[in-house]
Length: 236
Ligand code: GAR
Image 1: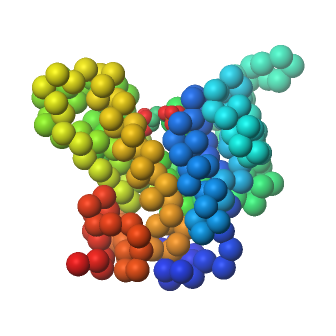
Image 2 (image 1 turned 180 degrees about the horizontal axis):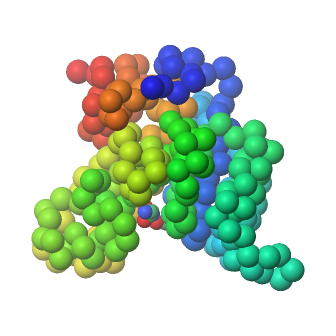
């Protein structure tokens, strides 16, 4: 199972990426920033939110990125959308913008198996923990309660099961004795902002292959180092 573009450096044009957000959009902003580099293999063509008041929408507009709101709740004259109608509307906007890759970045709405299947191997998510540990919410609180010594962030392909799917990039940080949820969250967020642009770069360059549910990553000739990329297929 591989993406359509399979050889490193094989990309003829930059992949068109949509970032889906529900809130402040700091990971989205990190992706937009990375994509400002003309050598980055993806462009952020669209930001979509299911929340009209999401702060990230304004950040995206200020950066000149097209935005859309697909709101499942009743608002003004718009009726409440059920899950299928919501996903039809989302799919329509993604198609309209000719999107190749979808990046979930703090998008707090579960997507159906049908929708996920449509974007198989082309949809990434970032999660604020070292998966498979601490799936779900309140990851920093639970990490502190569990007394783990390492915590971190993971970028993975989206599959129907929440916070599962082949891992593309992961970076660990140490948990300090005096950490609070706030201090831990801040250091993990800095990791997220580093690894999400790198993971998207690897995918957009055709360096990520999925075999038996695991990512095999070809980093030969890539600036992405082995420390943050498990399954590093090349660099010694
Ligand atoms: C990020 O920490 C992201 O990892 C998390 O929400 C935050 C969004 O922040 N996502 C999840 O918990 C999804 N399971 P941002 O809007 O500033 O990018």
